[in-house]
Image 1: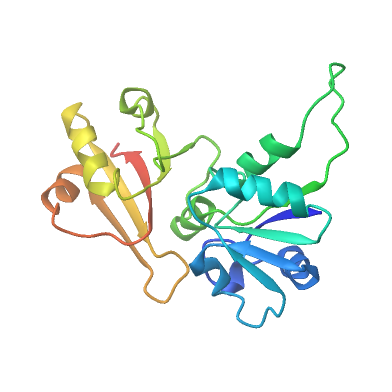
Image 2: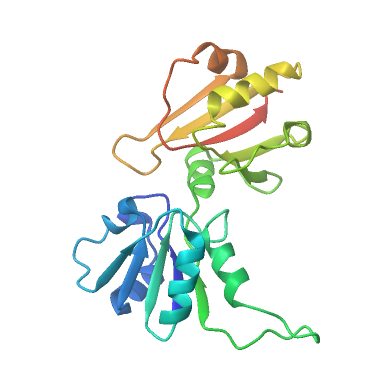
Length: 213
């Protein structure tokens, strides 16, 4: 059985009991260096994640009879590895019934959920997205009143601020860095202020974009 486990935004306090139980029962733990470091007492086999997703899928196929846990930041199905694994292993019959599967997902707290909770901001009408490995369509995104974006090194707060200003909009940007960690930092700035701080190197971050109105 392959279990994809969301371990939350980082801190152990945000990991669910279901996640911890699955990890406890695992024979193999798969994850990035930072993820694996969260479980120093795990005594089974570990496998480091890298960019070779095809190689990982092949290895999982060959080992799916073993109790394997694949660790994911936040929630596995919010622009995470859960989508790739479910697409690879889970299929549907012509009648719409799901094939017998050997995959399960244990959801986790996403960094967006965490940041909105810290802001006391409801998520009822927020547009969720990510810039990881993709170029966001800012013409489409900035039609929304509330947007939350998990960023990467290519499209981060500075680039988002430039896109906002290029469209003549006035927006407030809430930037959450290293969420749930000891060096967590959450700031609220307008797009002009962020654009003027182009020399700042942000840590792992999520940006919530709001109309200043």
